[in-house]
Length: 105
View: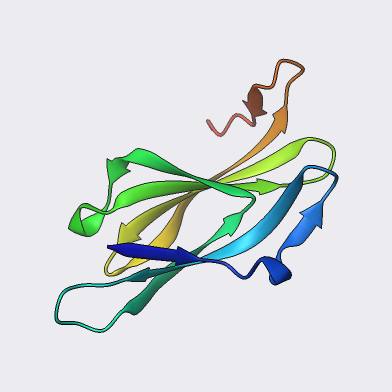
């Protein structure tokens, strides 16, 4: 199983509502030592349906920014650790949806 930990004393406050934290991820396997497999950075995390290596779930981190902006960072488990796979710049709409920058070129 995966173990996710954060030290709340090191989180950075953004406005009145959010704190961005560093979430360290460890993996424990029977007969092996627990080992570090990556970090997520953001105010909150979301498990995605897609899977990376070893059938590990992709994860999206929401990095809060001032004035209702948000950086969405998607992570994928590759070659034994989590790596950033995609980043989107977004802002909050009036109805609580996120409007994200068009990344098509």
